Length: 213
Picture 1: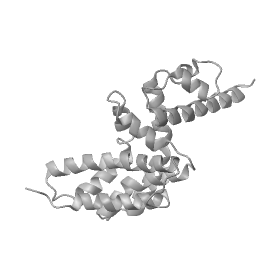
Picture 2: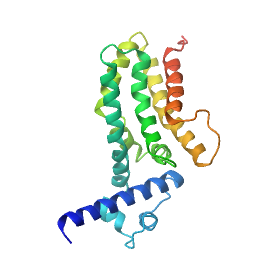
Picture 3: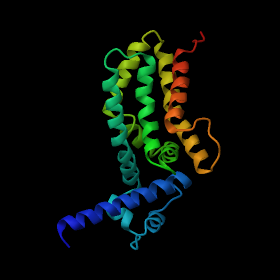
């Protein structure tokens, strides 16, 4: 076997393991799934395949997050470039929301990433991985700067509170939609992009809502 062939087989095995782990984590939660179960679901005869290729469970979770972060980042960078320096509040909210929703729409049916992210965020030990790898993407610094300009009059305490609400909505809304699609249940919007537009509407309204003294 040549080095190129072996590298291709290793890469294919890693992708198979990542797909199996993402599905199992999404359906059952991270804590409930063992490396052995992932190896079996990935068709690996060696029950230690997950540890061999990825190390600890936290490293596997990080690899799944990174697998999706890169295409989402590309979509966000392109959208930021189109907005330029003169974008309004809705433009910057779209830069935050739509890359993730459009990425989910590109994955076909079914998808598991939204439910996977929601499961990870319920685990205090693993939540920092999503926050570090997904919410710390370089493009999001540009989005934050744009939002800062548009929301300069919002009191800092209220802005921080609403930012946290927005982050939670970005996890919960896609996961709920993904669960509905997996169950064959009706959804309010026909496509992931349309669902993203509805989420943008809600987030813009949240930021512009009255502030109670």
